[in-house]
Length: 167
Image (cartoon, rainbow, N blue to C red):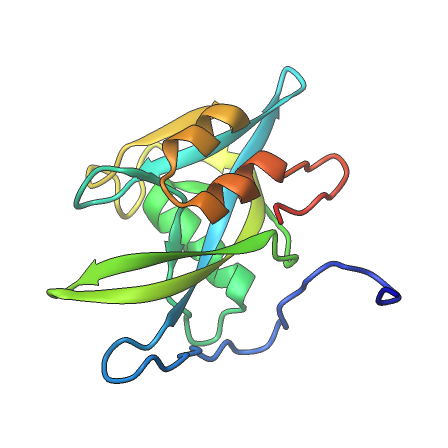
């Protein structure tokens, strides 16, 4: 017995409210919104990865909820600020992944909703230019470079031609 209808997940387009799932004391789970910047080159999907400002590991652009922005809109703003890209945004969630963010000496558990962003413009300069590196890589290579297993799965399973989600 299954559920009738679409299995797509869409986050409402209204004003986002941060979600905190309490684990007690200061270990509440935080929500973030991330973009999967991609392009199709010679029939192959390429993903734009950026480095963290601290450790230099490869990640997707992501950030906190923003007043007056939809979750996907916040992800697109982060993609511009952190990676210098703009494009066609989808409000359909590709999937979710978790990680632990080090912030001001604390370790914060975070869950990130990922939205696809088909890159149409790449800027030479952008707000975090000089603080991060960015690199276009194949979908397979992108999945190998990121650390989080759930994010690897999202990247590996993403298919923009069929709308297949990264779950």
